[in-house]
Length: 274
Image 1 (cartoon, one colour):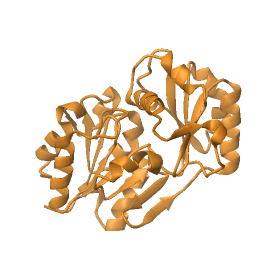
Image 2 (cartoon, one colour; image 1 turned 90 degrees about the vertical axis):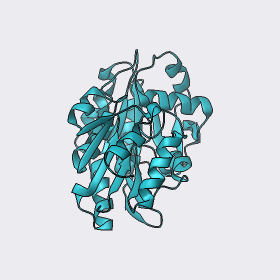
Image 3 (cartoon, helix red, strand yellow; image 1 turned 180 degrees about the vertical axis):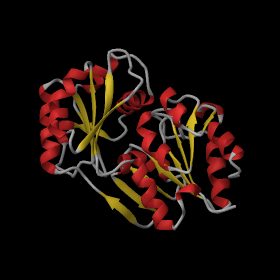
């Protein structure tokens, strides 16, 4: 069997949303696939700081920050933070309309101080919201915005109650930045990400494939939400979790059981990876 490159989203795919702990079956599948010569990469919206506890379990590298920072075990392949002026414009316009913001550098994440209160009033609805709520509750490296140290920022995550709150920032920045809104909206909470059009998870897959000389038809991607769409559309074989977005399921080659139901192990086995 040809060497495959496997790309795994974290929240809602490799782990339950908001967790750093994959099911034992998932890690057994990953290690068995690696033992057969395949390489397994994380492919996530998380920055390197937030994915580090998962990466340390033996992955071959990551497409991090939704594609803005791509690395193997020993080499950085792509590094593209936001332009400082764009970052400052986005932050100002989002704040003026009452949007709650978190910002991600390579090694740290900062959030508006009142974000926790806002999330407590919102209902459950998707893996991104649950991740941020748990991250705040458990203090997983999210620092108060007042402590932001000026580090280059790769991504702004936004949460608000109405889409109209995003319009000023959208008008100013949409030419160069995607406003990716989750397609499953939690009660009283709309959330999403502001991401540079220069990259996405799919381009991250291409960068890694080129580095290892592996054709795209020998890449496999696993995801659960619409922020995985570019990865799903790029890889040779695409897999969506049963707990994932209905829209992503429609675009994927196969659907596997949910993360809590040993979905990755089942998919790896079905695809002949283990």
